[in-house]
Image 1 (cartoon, rainbow, N blue to C red):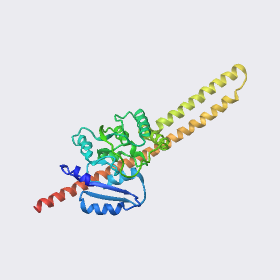
Image 2 (image 1 turned 180 degrees about the vertical axis):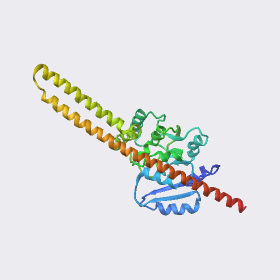
Image 3 (image 1 turned 45 degrees about the vertical axis):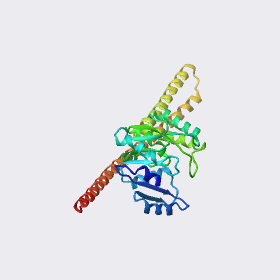
Image 4 (image 1 turned 90 degrees about the vertical axis):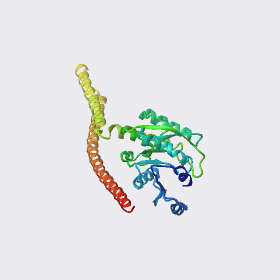
Length: 304
């Protein structure tokens, strides 16, 4: 908090710091209450149990009042002095989201490089480091699905929704506390999450496009195999039992894929309705927030 106060001392736009206590079992919450008395810009949110970074980001987004949000860990691997550089391209309307490319040695660099390489190969995002400190417009959080660990793909999802993304180098310092939890064992989980995000971006709105094509392909294989079997039977008088087994199998699988696609279309329709309701609700909240700000300004002007 002391470094943040020093780094943001000359911030003309105004700022606040929202600290998320994610189920700490030490004295973090008591320390935060003491810090609130010393730093008026500090606001605190407490999770009663450990819910992870994705939920912490969500809680911070709901508690924050600013239009530009910055995700920063509290272990001082990154210095608050670099926050103005992250935010500057957004304030200048040069980007909607800015991520920091880590400069320096750090733990799990090999695992992180594999993750970043796979992500760039699959999603073609224009940055080298997806899992780092970030600054972004508030509305980007509205596009982020509430899923565990999907915060790692904020850049991918933002770029897929048309937001501009840029990157600046950010120095990395030794940890003051804690340790990395992203090890070799996280690679399989990360790959599965990556495939899930890819499916979400490519086929979530039209799942029948994928499953219908798979089903149609299997039906085509079954039809061709049936025609070939009938021709062979007519020519040689010998039936091919294994061909009929293949036909039955692909027809069953094709039907399953089609049914899955149709069910997916129903789910996609419900999700579209929920997104629209959420958009309307957010607009009403923004209107209420704007009215509150205008009323506060009016009262201050009236009182001199």
